[in-house]
Amino acid sequence: MATITKRELAIRITEKLAANGTDITQQTISEIVQTLIDEITDALAHGDNVVMRKFGAFEVRELKAKLGRNPKNPTATVKIPARAAVKFKPGKEMKEKVAATLKVVRERNK
Image: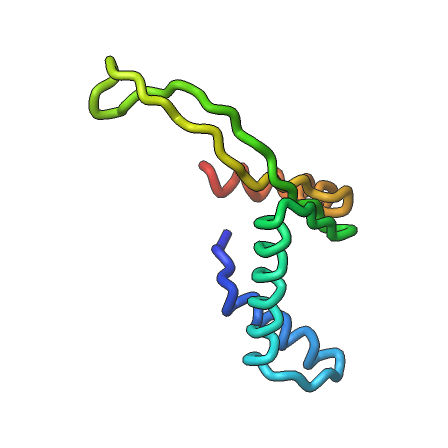
């Protein structure tokens, strides 16, 4: 199992579109991917939810303040302030597709 970077994603999209007869450059696809990421980030930063059908939903949730431990000094407690965090809920189609990869994941983790 490999890690796919933004560049590799742009290459795959360019190749798939080229196979379907769409002539578009890898640079243009890279700009589209970066614009998509920027727009999602900006929407979340403004407190909006982002929903993409067949993919999933991003939302901002508050993580409450809590007490933690300092790993260098386990006897000392540290206050961790409340903060906003992005949560992702996968869509039905993604859940089903990913669920089918269990065998591959188990093989990788051996």
